[in-house]
Length: 62
Image (tube, rainbow, N blue to C red):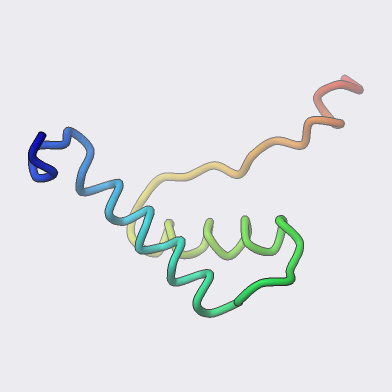
């Protein structure tokens, strides 16, 4: 299968690029929430409509 024929290649490229930008800037050692916030900011900067993940404990207590 040719990589150029993937249905969501453009958005996948943006997501992967964003991940590497965040990782290269922050490195390792932070809480997941720090990476989530940074990735959210970068993805929105590329014009993607994104939502943060919901807190599972919050959903269970409702």
